[in-house]
Length: 459
Image 1 (cartoon, rainbow, N blue to C red):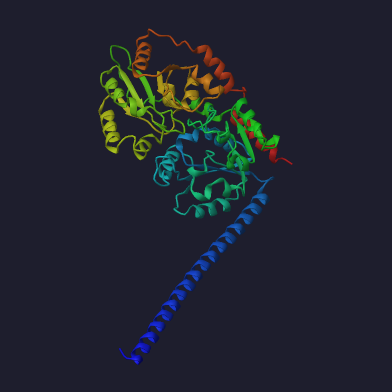
Image 2: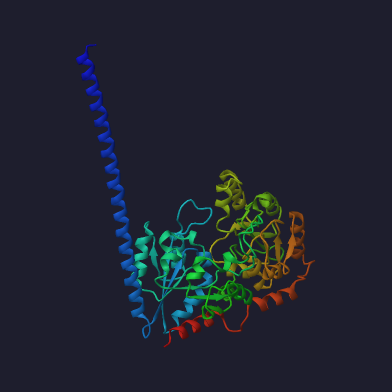
């Protein structure tokens, strides 16, 4: 190659590198412009949201007394509706209130995405409860509607922000007064079974961001009130002992058993509810035993035509055991197919006061029903996993009202003894002690809550 050709090659190579460098710089500039544009868009969205926040807050303040107190109930789990239903009904009868119900998707541990609003809406329609449907995919669009309603008070069903679409976390609801009504009785000391010292006793029950942002927290028991007070994050007037509205709602439901009446030798079949918890082999709670005993239940039910079994699992259970690879979907499907093929077996979901009232006995390894079923004065069998999260004082008292078993044979013997009339409930006195704790006042809990809210709005 001649000297001129070498020079030309060097020049071309240099030009090529310069063009490549210029192209890279142009791409970097374009990426920077796109990133900056996205930042501007995010800032604009935040400005819009802030403006709407201020407008909604202003509207809410303007709408207060002497007009009616507008209360919005955000419902995403029909199983928990009975905790708020008495309050909603009482507000309908009270001239001070303008109650509105809205339905929303939820994300339980077994769900792969936010879902379930349709089922909640269908059940509320069956109960003749008018409601707005926040079923849009963009939860912030639903939040705009909520803000336009300018509620004085917002009720959510639980403290768990992760169960709610992003726009309905407690962070975005602080434009209104968040009012906490318990969806269950606090019976756990901690939620973890791993010995994690980072979890303070009662922190997840009493000291989440939702609780800290709340305007009012109504407490179901003296124990709950004391634990809320112990964190010293609330002014005294924010915490109110009210009792648990759900108890009366459960008791008010008429008995309803999901089988047609059938007599055998002049006697109806013995009625059993089996309610397994979702926390199977779960280090967080670890109450569940479903994977260990579901085959035993199938055999027992198939050989007991003089008994009727209602399978009432926790809403998360059947999805959770598959998602966490404890059971396969085929195993779950096989169980359900076999269970429903038996004439004396069925399943139940949704509201359950009538079911409890019509039953003879319950078997559970869970949490809520350990305190809810005893109010019906019927025998309860608690299938103890032996590895669950620690119970608090109320949890231990509730456990003392139940037959505690650790194996299927013992459980079956106890239930059969009740069916045959050879065993009398030995826990009546313990239940009386529990009732005194669970019902702190003669007045209904919803009446106490209504009176407190009204007095808070009066000048």
